[in-house]
Image (cartoon, rainbow, N blue to C red):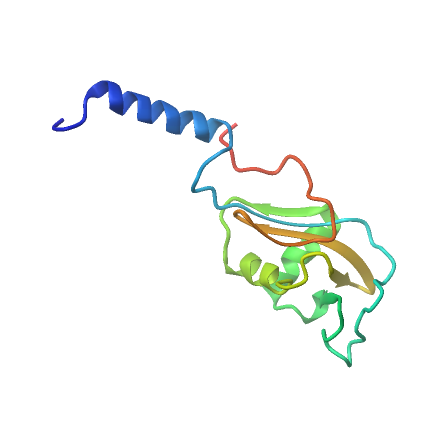
Length: 139
């Protein structure tokens, strides 16, 4: 190979493999949408007729398109929805919380859930604690 010696190539390959095995990668593209157990309605919660004009953003699951609703439903029933292949539904659901980092909640069947949403390395809301154990590592 012109310009690259075998030793350099092996070192680069070993470093990439080690990063993948550790669950660390500069190109990791996972997403996580999680909720804590239901809480009391947050103060300043806008009523449905008012929309989301108050200091608290409430995303109403029943108003979501079906793919986003299924993500919310999974998070409510299992505590979290995690994927190693972020698609448009998760990205769109997370961006509904933009601007409400510490004041966003999911309303699912008349319960208010503190919410955590992360796509790759961008956190959109964290009124819920980020759950442990979700990564896209090989092991």
